[in-house]
Image 1: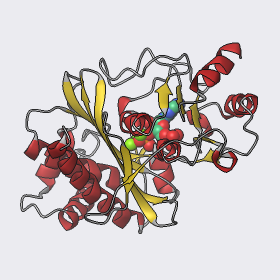
Image 2 (image 1 turned 180 degrees about the vertical axis):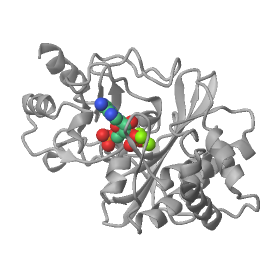
Image 3 (image 1 turned 135 degrees about the horizontal axis):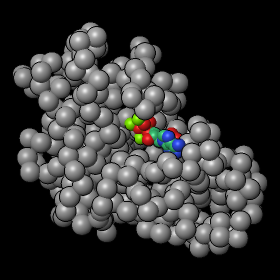
Image 4 (image 1 turned 45 degrees about the horizontal axis):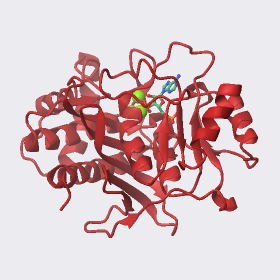
Length: 324
Ligand SMILES: Nc1ncnc2c1ncn2[C@@H]1O[C@H](COP(=O)(O)O)[C@@H](OP(=O)(O)O)[C@H]1O
Ligand SMILES: [Mg+2]
Ligand SMILES: [Mg+2]
Ligand SMILES: [Mg+2]
């Protein structure tokens, strides 16, 4: 019996429902709205956050949820129509009889919790830019206790598995391994294991599609020094952690963009992915070898960049980075 059996069951169900909503919205190629920081958000980001937060609050009323989105923009009168559309999508994918515009706003704002001794962190759509391009995105949910991620769920509805079946749901519980399954009810989970260095066809590296989110030039030179000469797998969202966990890449590099020296990574962009890779025998640190900090703040203020590997090559990657 898993130590987080109830948490896992509720979280999987919540992410599964949110994935259906996101895929439904994606069919229509939704318009993007702009947040105050100019980054995009869609009706699916809001719908996914509302659905997941409400289900978590029903089951764990005392757990704070640290989510990416909030309702400040949505509450503006000019957003009335968007709110109506979001509410309709939530109603369609959620058999709760109190789906009203007012409640949807309230549920989204359940995600306004603070980092605490025990909390959930949620990225309702990670890779919104990928989602808008009809590329990869992830619904990422993690439970953190005392700064340690205990449970990670990552839904990647557009990601094909190694058998070519579209849609992968990744699940990891601390000390109990990482698994992937399809989105079907009662789907059979497959245990994940990172790639071995002698598996040359999968000894590749992954990075963001968005050049503004990282330092692609530097990443390619680091990979070269490690003997990886094939082109990077460019993919949006935490799905890249899924690639490393399932042995389809040996390395995911996210080095800071030199044009944005003040940018700090968000906990919801990494918590779920990190436990999934670690439980598949991989390793995750920042570019200086520091543990990712999930215990103090929404922003990982004392971390710079992220290095995700199969485990075996991790020290070597850090050494190359130090030398450069
Ligand atoms: N300058 C920057 N450096 C690193 N990450 C950034 C960034 N600007 C935005 N991001 C983050 O990059 C995430 C997407 O990751 P990726 O580049 O791997 O697809 C975004 O998540 P959201 O899409 O949830 O907003 C956002 O939080
Ligand atoms: Mg965003
Ligand atoms: Mg994100
Ligand atoms: Mg997001």
